[in-house]
Amino acid sequence: MSGGFPETLHVSFADSVNRFVDRLVLAYGDQLRSVSEGLLQLLVALENLLRATPWWLLLLVVALLTWHASRSVIRALVLSGLLFLIGVIGLWDKLLQTCALVLVSTGLCILIGVPIGVLLASRPRARQLLLPVLDVMQTLPSFVYLIPVLMLFGLGKVPAIFATLIYALPPLIRLTELGLSQIDPSLTQAAQGLGAGRWQRLRRVMLPLAMPSIMAGLNQSVMMALSMVVVASMIGARGLGEDVLAGIQTLNVGKGMEAGLAIVALAMVIDRITQAYGQPKPGTFNQR
Picture 1 (cartoon, one colour):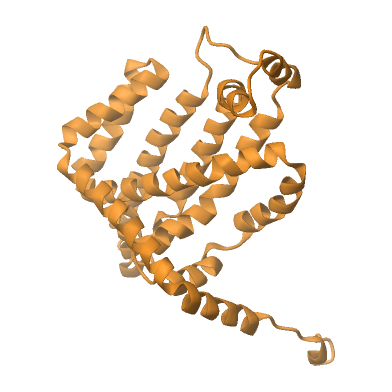
Picture 2 (cartoon, rainbow, N blue to C red; picture 1 turned 90 degrees about the horizontal axis):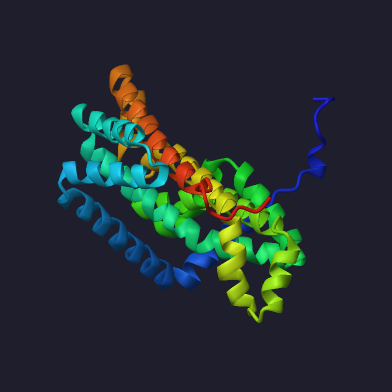
């Protein structure tokens, strides 16, 4: 074809990537298997704990968390009522499975994202190097990085955790770095002048002041984790996404709608609680 791109200029790096992944599996297969088994045990233990807890007690915990975050009895009743409706339509067990997956993924996001955000705020060179990586993580289609994750960890819940982690991690890193970068330098200088070390300044001054931004990042990470539950169901993770996928495969509109609305309800509950915790409370110090 005269208007086509010349084949002599075609360059493909697919074989190089495949060889790298193959070497990674051969060299670190045992370590990857250990990580996979540890995460699976954690996830299964959390699922069993949620299942062993009476449904009414879980609703009470959600209501108390909502009230503690927002000081609103009406909001606490509404959000716990949304979860109650998920149980009414017969999706309570699927809800617990999705909650366990989201909680484990979010916990890993916090353990990894907050320290990296602190690093980016304090090291401009690290920020320049890692920001393009975060851009790729946010824009790369999820099915692309599912391929190496599946090769490294196989099918099941563990690859779903890692796929969710890759997708949900960047917002927490970015907003942690943003919150720390916007702190008035005079505040940290005053703390240093009073004899506070670097760790003390970070723990007692910087992190509390950046907490609204960090909580906003956590909120975004949780929302993005929930948006991955359908994709996670395609690689073996169970939960509400499994019913959405089954509805697509069987053209069962009602089943897919029930599971989809349950995901929306869970997202609303988590969103309102994390947003409320991220807002400064009356009478607390707030940087202007």
